[in-house]
Amino acid sequence: MNLQKRDCNVKIKLTPTGTQYLVIDLDFSGHKISFGASSAVGGQFGDFVSALYALYFEKDDCHNEWRPRESITAEDDRHIIGITTTVDWDNEGEVMTIEMTKYCEGDSTNQIVMRITTDYGDTYSQFKMNDKDLCYAVAKACTDVLKQYGIYGYKYTTELDTFDFHKLLFIKAQALDCLEARELLKVDEFSKKTDFNKEMELLLFDM
Image (cartoon, rainbow, N blue to C red; front, side):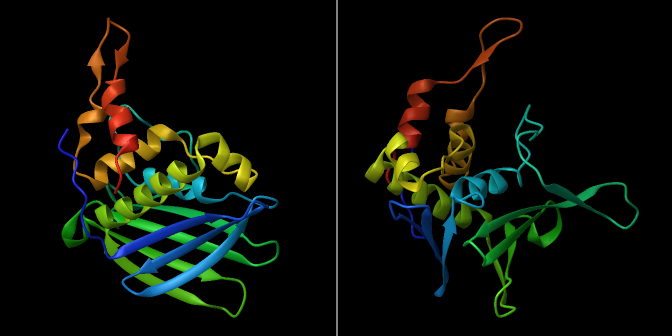
């Protein structure tokens, strides 16, 4: 597969603390936000991965694994013009809510609008970014932390957080413009398979 690194103006870093907190550093073109999500009271970065994945329509996938996922419809209510997902990170009393919207038509087709609100200080931020840049930053953050800690080691060190790998691989394939590893190949009348070697190559690729 033709996998290539590239520069990206969205950056995310995950720092497990060895306790209940996962420190998540977000950088949107120089605007930096840091938050410690606690596994004691809610989800961590795995929820963000699932929420980002749910913004896309993947073949033969109804996204039943993730809620909430809301459709934005046109005024005549006949067709979907966008998808919105929401993630809450809780710092044992301080909550950050991230709402992501991806539009399906018009000039914003390749963009994600992210709204970040917190319940302390009434902070409000809104960012608009290329969807592949966000996918790249998410995939890089997950790849880096898994290579440092390992799959079980990462879960153990964060005391909870895990990534759904078929979602992570989809996001990484989107980021790298390489959906080859997602290709479904017919096994028989009822079964399909993917190429495990390509999936592992994608998972292990440094970004």
